[in-house]
Length: 383
Image 1 (spheres, one colour):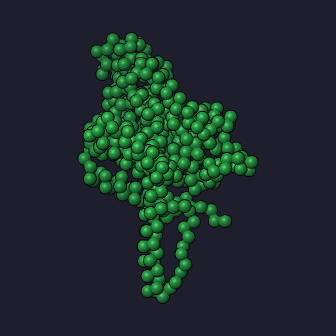
Image 2 (tube, one colour):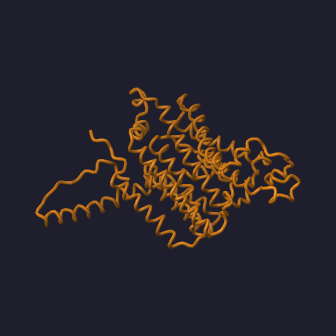
Image 3 (cartoon, helix red, strand yellow):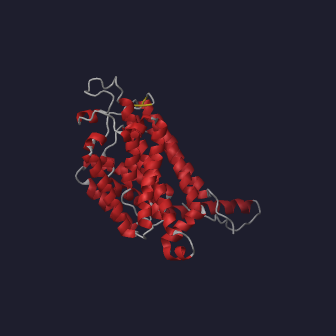
């Protein structure tokens, strides 16, 4: 049997179309303010991408991905805050050299767990490792005991609520409800001017494509096929000798790492991090992004995130009190009418038209050359 290719023809087309949109069309057509908004939206697409692997392929619905998004965001915010809290910048404080919210809460010494965030290398490692290890602990505790389905979703939601309460309650160490603000430089490079926002946008797009390629690799590898099999017939996979729990833990950890990268990029682009991006509501919104884009589609997750956030920004400016009802109605409509989201609409209605046009053109070309071939099988599912 021929092994699946890493990138199918539809994957290459999807990558090219997304690159054209993100690298050419949007930067050329939007001003810096709007482009920075797109960068903010794209940070959520990291989470949606992880949910496609975790929920779409593995059948593991997590309603607490905001936890990992927040851990990544807070990790980057702690580094940036320490850089902005030099003795010279904080000389008016009663204790110079520590973040301002610590001084306001009468803390006179930098806590021990803040110390590694003086180093950018350790900060990047913490952003990647801490959420992944936390996801591993949750996954091992749940999946080894065969806790799944709606129980797992509720538990992850509870963890998001607990972490939010913890962050708000420990104001002296986390900035409380206001979060960590007034972030200025990254290794001495000012992240606030317009040109820095443009550079950060392209850096984020590069990271996003790296995560998409990794997700595509997982989907086409044996691991991806086992995840799908596990979603459809978990007991059969278990009786075949595979450790279902370990595969679930892997998918959950990878989704957590993607979310943490998105959180770190969010902090760099927006310039602050607060508990409002960690709790239950943002976690559920992230699931909606995935559902609208199509939980079985890697590219659909990105388009769904962009579409929902564009709608959120546009409608909330005109109807701020009705937006949440609109978001709920959108989710219900997608689940009932288009269960596979935007990707399903593309696959069921648009892609067949394109395939027919290509077949007709190819058939006409073959006839003009005096050749006749049968249809060419792609061998991999269309994205």
